[in-house]
Length: 143
Image 1 (tube, helix red, strand yellow):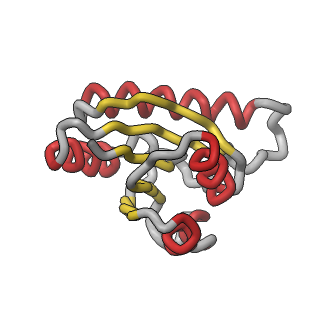
Image 2 (cartoon, one colour):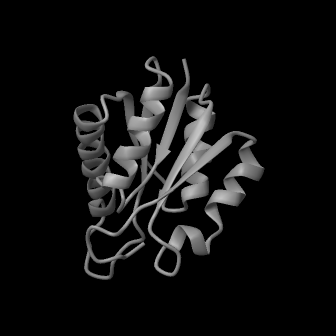
Image 3 (cartoon, one colour):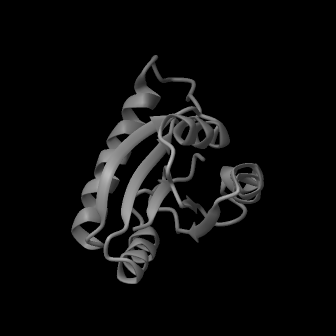
């Protein structure tokens, strides 16, 4: 049984992510998934706690979609620090046992995570297999 940590934010409900998870489930029917949604950088007109609430709602919505469309077994949803590398680090420290990171980003040019070189930095820092999914933006990009 493989345990996947899916790291996503704006792409949480994307068909591209659903397709990749469906493929992973087809490869290993006993696979389990956790969804981690780092907080979005604070917007000037937000109030304290809003970014956490948005992240939590996205994580729960992604859980529902992946369970329904990809038949994924989602055992955990979590929110994390705004810095996605720190969010992953915290999750791995508090909940060890993941085999693979699935990092879902917006396309190059608009993805803040790709500008941060998140995929390669996560590979180097954690020593886990990293699957990178590029998803089209479903809403105006802020990441």
